[in-house]
Image 1 (tube, rainbow, N blue to C red):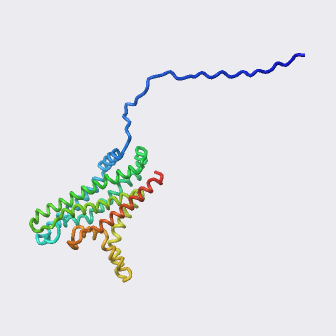
Image 2 (spheres, rainbow, N blue to C red; image 1 turned 180 degrees about the vertical axis):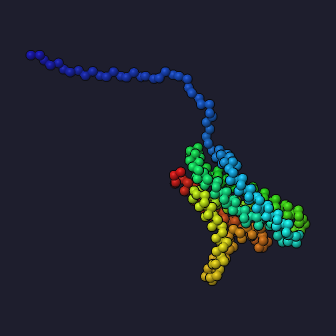
Image 3 (tube, rainbow, N blue to C red; image 1 turned 45 degrees about the vertical axis):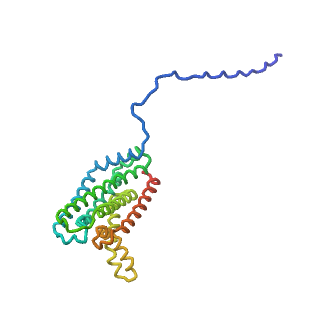
Length: 281
């Protein structure tokens, strides 16, 4: 009878330490740099100056402000500027011209949502807050410069036509008037970012500008609502511009109205940033 042999366990041999043969390293010919806000600003500047809507809206804006302003200036005489600044004729053009900046502010961002190009923008720059910041800065700079040049040009021509009739300083009205209509455009841009629809955002902004100018006439009929109507009448956009250009009184410069618009714009911008990070493209 044979005796069973004990089973032996053969240990696996260790795997050889294999490494690929060294080869030549690859260096991309494309320089790699960290992106920053400057790149986003350059991109948005290229966009805004390439859009036909920019040329059309700014062209109509200049036509309204300068054209209506000079037309009004030709119908005035030297005595009219004894108590008002030379930039007043530009006010009448700004009443309509502000609608152009509101429209452009909405289209700066809503047009990308409408065409779907916003996906490409956010793919190239995943930091969405950086994109919105660049849009806000570029649009504000363009709107402010164009507005100040238009108002200042009307003031200079009016001063030449009626020279020596007034000692009132009118440089402040140029800066504050340009700042007011530019902030309206920035508010429209923030509204376009939140609503993502051109027609809806433009309609909302027109309502925000026009309703406070029309509604006080009905509110002031009632004694209980008269105070609300007076405040609304005092702070609506047309009357705010009138105070900035010192049409109502030389002692009022529209500072409270400008401050209110700046606060409302800041709240709208904060809402645009918050919704931008929470929504899908």
